[in-house]
Image (cartoon, rainbow, N blue to C red; front, side):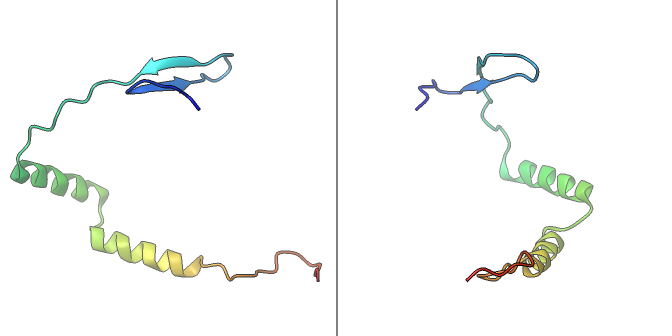
Length: 80
């Protein structure tokens, strides 16, 4: 078990040996009221080009197409 302190992470950089211990930045508390956060949320939603309802419908359709049966034949050989 790793004994990391609060907001500490271990990072291994590509093409380098060893692991570095880093401390994450402190995120300041949100100083927005509900109305301001709603304006920002709507602005970000418009940038995506799709409503939340449309994205949920698309995900629901995708989930139906990717459901896997309990047993699925994946090769030509059968095993008993």
